[in-house]
Image (cartoon, rainbow, N blue to C red; front, side, top):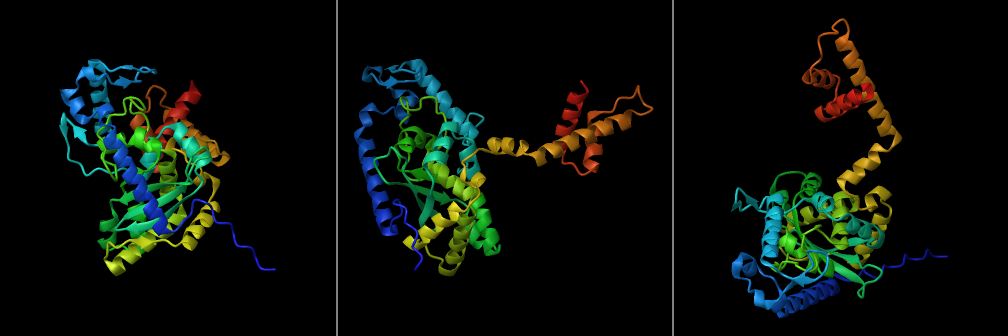
Length: 359
């Protein structure tokens, strides 16, 4: 009996259909945005041109109320905080920095609830096409969505330098995937919560947004929706994507063309099947701190920590032997531990643990 072919996930479709669907979503979004001008708090409004007679509302206190002049000042301060965090503003002046953000930073700076939704609800993200370093991904939609899929576009800002930098394809692809990106998603969460943050932080791909999210996200919390987070997890931790990135570089070097390179439905299916074989820790969308906590809870990590504490204690006792009145300086401890093969951060942690154990 012939082996049964695996069922194709509903969200997978041809690159031509996916591209058409993404363009329609983009056109609809722009038309809706332009039609909402009367209720948008724009960059001009933040600059001092807001007319209170417009009677716009905010939820900055947790429930709807009329905007005040103090709210405008709070919004402007929040904008500056975002711009400082992403290197766009320093010393009271714009820096003119190129922008972009690392995929792992997108995950680290996201809201925990968005990471949890991405892990539980968005199981797949597959590339559909690549045009000169801009990759169109499609993901499955969440369980309560009225659509089957969402479209995420990622611009790899290091694509050109990886293409011509003289590294072997494998290393060039790794460099590109680890570099900065800009991104966009067609979902409502990105549109109404995060596109403004991406715009002022200069890691937005696609249409910019100057309308402050005074109702949906007035405190500018978070960074990315669950669909973008699934894509960034695939880029940062997915070996299957790294194979795709190698094809991007190899094809780019052969063709030197910005022509759209499509991924067949069959190859999308293979991408999904490979993703399903990934380790759970690579499928879960977790921040660097969350991953570190998990590692530290593992028996092997705990044994290494105990060994470091013992080494630090032994060092303290050795240095104090016959020299009771001559304390060992912190830098002397660091130097001794680093001579034993410790990195500086590990040495600091070991000494702190030893000091705590002696109290």
